[in-house]
Length: 171
Image (cartoon, rainbow, N blue to C red; front, side, top):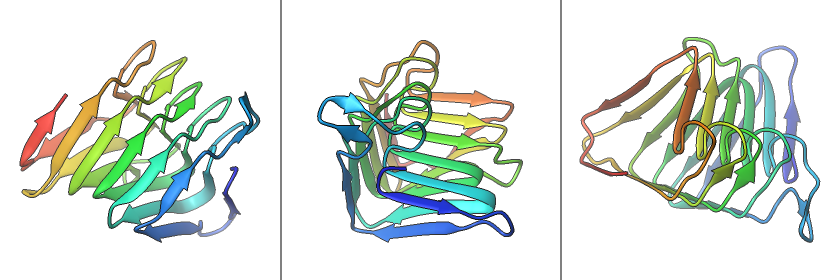
C-alpha cells in the first residue's frame, strides 16, 4: 500500500478513518508503482478498513488489485464517502480478498462511486469470497461511469450482493 501497510498474521488489523482525504497514492508521476492497495493494504484474519464522515478516496492506483483499498481476510465498511477516479487491474477502487461469510464490502449513508476503472473485473469494487451489502433508510448510493471488463460497478466471486432499505440509488 502506498499510504498505509498493515500486516497482521494473528487476529488481523484495522484501519479506521473519519473525514479524511486519501488521494494520489500508488503512483510516481504517471507510473503506477504499487502492486496491491494503492493507498491502503490491510491483511490477516479479521482485517478491516472503515471510513466515515465524508471521507474522499480519489485518484489512487495499483497495478494488480484495489486501486485505493486492499483488504485480505476481512472487510471494508464505508459510510458517507466519495470514491472517484481510482484505477487497478481488478477492483478499480476497492478489492476484498478471502473475506469469508462475515466479510466483504458494505456501504451506508450518502456514498458516491464514479469514474473508477479496472482493466480486469470490478470497476469500483471486487469482492472475492464474500458479500456486498448496501443498507440503511438514509442511504443514497450513486454509481456512475465505472468501467471494467466484467462488473462495471461491482464484481462478486463466490458471494452475493444485497441492497436493503435504500433511500435512493442511481446507477
